[in-house]
Length: 332
Ligand SMILES: [Zn+2]
Image (cartoon, rainbow, N blue to C red; front, side):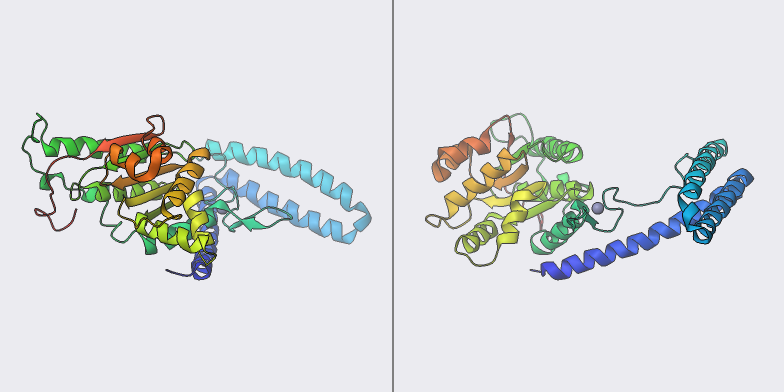
């Protein structure tokens, strides 16, 4: 796993580059507006003169500084109002010459809060996503809705049904895409993708993760095996506290292959309960793939977990059915 320090440093230098790009964009917009409208150019020049004369005046006469800044402020407001009107007149938005930044909370500095300086959510999200992309999302770039190929699923009726396997997966894919496109943090709606191996569950979970990531949310994708490993280390006082916090606090947690993890006494069931329950109380969503059906979930993890994972008000249970398609395609 990449070290959090390095990833944070990388993210901060990314923000520095972003701030430089913001300044370039501000310059470009200013030049564009000045070229489009002589009125805008004149007002900007006037504003600048006013600013410098105000600064000079305040230096020359410190006792009058307050008076000067008061009258300067009024004039400044007047110029700004004219500027907004002139921008609209030449077909630009009225806030076109306002400072440019991607994150309104920290203005791309990565930090918020006075006097307590803390990391902005955008920085935390960038670090988290980078850490877990390196850790668990291998192949995520390849596994997305655009590369999802339904033609590898047989177009023959599933045993005992009218629907073909391809028709079935097409429906699931549409549902998952809609879910990812309308995903919102703190709604707490999750997916339980269940069925045998080789039916496309993990692929579709990765598609969802990728799309939700692209939409700017924090996403942690982890195998059930690694989840239990992290919880075990945490429980026994070794490192791992940050990883556990990430799994609890990210906007979307994706757990792959629940049921394949080792059943460690005093660790596995209580860890899964803890994660599922904490996220549920905080209205944070989980997407899970598993080879187990709901009866088996109840059996393996006790009723309290089974009930939470299949609660229809919070989880959409999606059964994958048909034949294993891995023999048709190298990768599903
Ligand atoms: Zn921010």
